[in-house]
Length: 92
Image 1 (cartoon, rainbow, N blue to C red):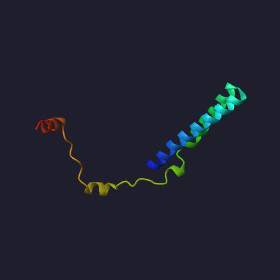
Image 2 (image 1 turned 120 degrees about the vertical axis):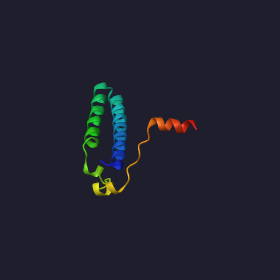
Image 3 (image 1 turned 90 degrees about the horizontal axis):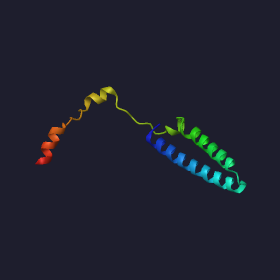
Image 4 (image 1 turned 135 degrees about the horizontal axis):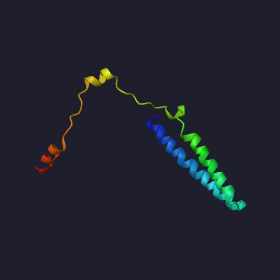
């Protein structure tokens, strides 16, 4: 799943859970049944899980391009700065 796919999953999850919650409360209130409300909300959670958890192909429409190992060797690696040298620079 790419970054844009993760954003889409997050939005779908929030939308589906809010819609199922609102529908569950309205139906539960009109039928005066707490059990019906909980069953509708549980169904919404299951539906949301089935839509968002599997790595569906439409979540991977913008794959990341990784460097080949031969290309990675051409680029210099970043230098690691130790904590002691950071303290020396910050005092000046």
